[in-house]
Image 1 (cartoon, rainbow, N blue to C red):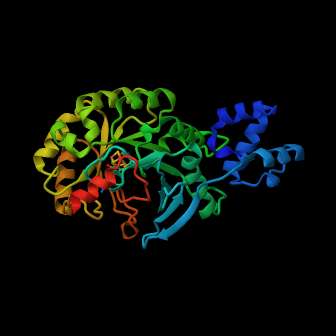
Image 2 (spheres, rainbow, N blue to C red):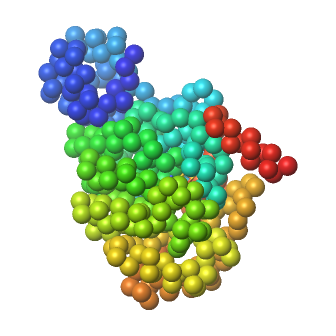
Image 3 (cartoon, rainbow, N blue to C red):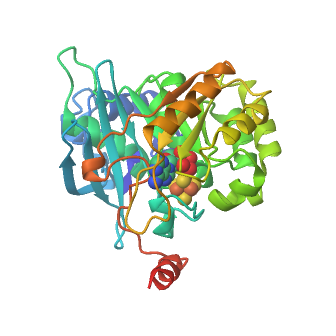
Length: 359
Ligand code: SAH
Ligand code: SF4
């Protein structure tokens, strides 16, 4: 069975051609799946009955199955989705007055092992397929239902769930294309954000192949500290990362990148860190988003107190850098940034090491 959620528009058209079908059939099916939220071929009423029968034999529209669902006191919803062989990933829906943001996972676990991240501590199992990535959006829209105006509730997508999207490039880009495609969700490029820990070559590819809004997990003002907090920095150090941001902005839908900066008490939250940051990002049009650290079991860090976070923000603002403090959402159901753990059958044996180290 071919899961049609695995194809972006171009791939679906190619697959239809292989079945001897015209391109406009692919477009019709795409609209049924994403605009109508339909998974039953029998309901696709403008397709010839013979085509519907054929599709029923060889294809399906199947989002990952939900294992658990939780709703936080602030309305944030979290779904644990089964992606097979003992792995599960998490998707979080964050309702706000003027939009609905879905935080989507791209890998079961993550191999990059950032020191403050609960997903990283889980180890890595595998990349998610396109169907598993776009299936999270499909599922959330399906579950929440269209609003009174007939629009889907998910208006913004951030690839900030489990995993490093740019290390699962092809599936991520196909899923992004479906978010943007007018025959699918038709979201504007500015409403779709990829967050990366800084995989420099893949940032260039994303810029060329599918530019969307970009967020960078910065977290440290110098290489010495970033090498510890975000180990991929050892491969792509800060000056290379800053240069990649500037190149990205040449083609980006927004004229700034967002730097995410998790505030860790006594580690990266001092005034001198803020001043060093200002020098670091001098040539990169940017905004800052300060994220109060979200603790998880055995986390080696503590959250900076609010006063410190505000002082840090004020220093950046005085240097004319727009800086926001991320509201903590959904932390009573462990749905806040960096708390997503899902269920990962670690293939890198990292879980082992972490367990040993904590004994
Ligand atoms: N791998 C990508 C996207 C997923 S992480 C990346 O690293 O950008 C999404 C965001 O949550 C990143 O900015 C990450 O640094 C941040 N994050 C991770 N652990 C966190 C924690 N414990 N508290 C707050 N933010 C965290
Ligand atoms: Fe992976 Fe991002 Fe977590 Fe780092 S912060 S371990 S890159 S998910």
